[in-house]
Image (tube, rainbow, N blue to C red):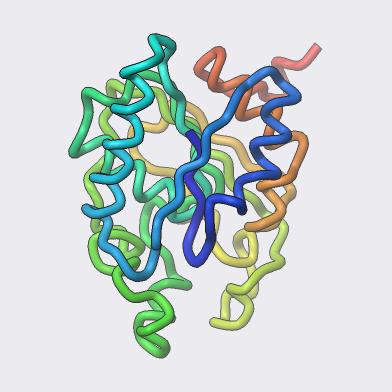
Length: 207
């Protein structure tokens, strides 16, 4: 199940879906209104979608989430732990709160709406240690964060320091931007590897 980020739509995950399909992973996309609705509303709808999947499938459902999608997943894991039966990967998710979101909330509040409090402000439940979570971050500084003064230290929107939560099984930094990670071949390969094996393929492991 693919979850998109702030101000996006399910179609934004199409490049990721296509890259993962190359690695034999079939994808479903979940869309939500990131600014208009609350995190609780997102997770309730996601629970309906996951329950509908399990009515017809036995295979564990994995989650791959971009940016705010990973925050939705955090809340979902806390509220519906029985529905986390596969592995999870977040791409460029500000797990520890978003500096860019802080500034938007301060100076352009309508642009972030319900996506800030108990979400991008970092006030979300910790990731449950019993579930496999892998986090991929980018360090190519190109993105909308430049407009709010984020000039270095991340992917152009999210800072590296915001991307590594407690209890993640593995962590990886790639030379990609915040949106570029969605179509990046290496990000897709590493995501597929984690979903199958529970860890990323690090340089010292490559043959």
